[in-house]
Length: 78
Image 1 (cartoon, rainbow, N blue to C red):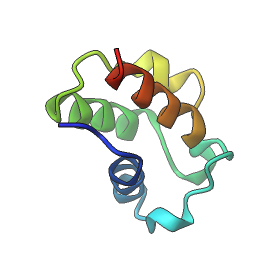
Image 2 (cartoon, helix red, strand yellow):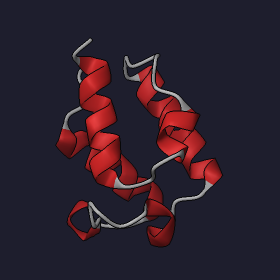
Image 3 (tube, rainbow, N blue to C red):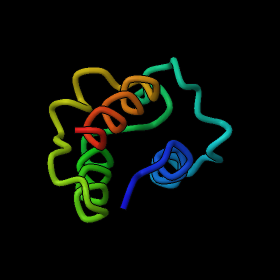
C-alpha cells in the first residue's frame, strides 16, 4: 500500500485532533501538538501500512510536514 500525501495528512491530523487542512506544511509539527509518543504511533502505523523502512529518527530530526512528505515519497520510490 502506498501512503499518499492525503493519507499522510489524515494520519497526522488524526493524531493531533486536527482537520488535515489545518496542518501547516512548513511549521514544526511539535508546535501543532506532535510529541514523541504520537510520533512513535505514526511510525508504527506507517510500518504496518507497508513502509517498514520508516524510522523515528528520520522523522524526529525535522518535524515539518514538507519534510515528512519528501521522506515518504523517497522511501516509496526506492
